[in-house]
Length: 205
Length: 205
Image (cartoon, rainbow over all chains, first blue to last red; front, top):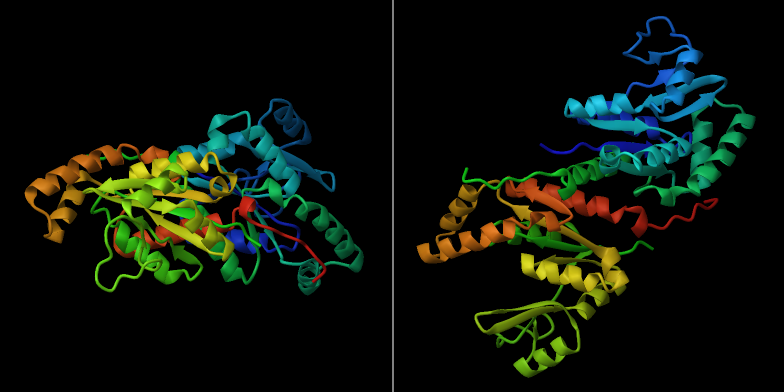
């Protein structure tokens, strides 16, 4: 039985991360998204344990203190995080796991994995970036959803994030969505057949 | 400018190595075969420096002593080898290099690369094997070119070689030629965009 891949993809906001992650999930039945934990209340129709694990701030804190999280962060006073157990449970089901996460979260995952052999053996990290600053700015403006002020802040954040590309195993300089998906697929396909993840019993038949 | 890949493929005799190497070379203009050195005399039509580097046994020995070879071996009293300079020259031309080599040769390349940073950074090793002993035997018999005795010897050699699959970065358990080529291509595509081989200068345009 093959050992699993924890496929972590980071990109600056507007870098095309969501598109490529959805393409990967659609193309790989053996790849699963992990369910995020959050302290924000469920929206209508959201189901606990399916869309998110919904925790009270107190429960979230308790789990942070217990060391349950691979990474966690606050966004506008709401907390979000990924539990180690969510990843390991998917491994037990024979799944590879996709993590779509920012650069700081990636650093946290790397730090936790450094202390846990199973996660360290599984972790593969990819940084996805547009080829130029101008290209990212154009994409952010093209979305039409952000004010000039928000775009300026995102561009400053992106500069800081992109400067950390060397922390990742792979660098994908984005082209078309199809090219990005093909490159991610090549990385996943290759990592799945690394010797360290393989098993071979060369029998008679 | 991206750093090069030295793509080393090993397989037991009859394992489908030549087919997959030819497919890779046909599909990747940036990938070059390295010219082998030999002490056997040129056959009609063979050109020195194109088909092989043809050396006298004395010159071959001199170059071995001078530490010029990545690997070298004797086959039926003829000597064959791959010079480091042949690989590095192709790197200078911006090429990735394909080495089709046996398990012992691969171990030699690894040993030399361990002492030379440029080769160590470039080296990617893949072991290609049929899924079972029976499958390899069937392939050897299917070629129709070997006696029972030769096939028995190749099967014994194969058993020893396959036992060393963990020495390689990747394990490709062969399927159809097209599947083998696709897996090799994924490995090559992924390794080409490893961060350690990449460069990113995130400029205005």
